[in-house]
Image 1 (cartoon, rainbow, N blue to C red):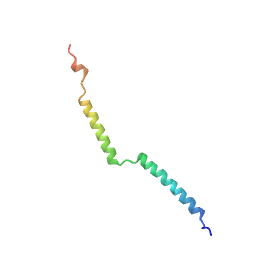
Image 2: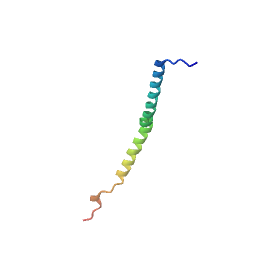
Image 3: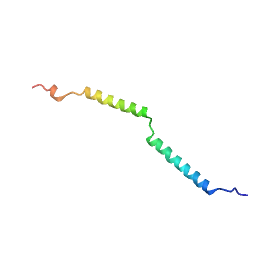
Image 4: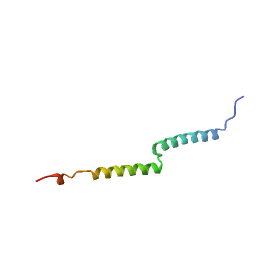
Length: 64
């Protein structure tokens, strides 16, 4: 004897599973914690500031 399947429930379960797959892909693509984003931004700004502070100006080094 075969098992009786409620098509409405099966359709909803399939849609839920597909939605979970999309959600997992979005989490992998966009999902970085705010603390990690802030840390990355702070490190980038610090690196930029350090680089700019060590920059040599062409006008200051010229001897006329």
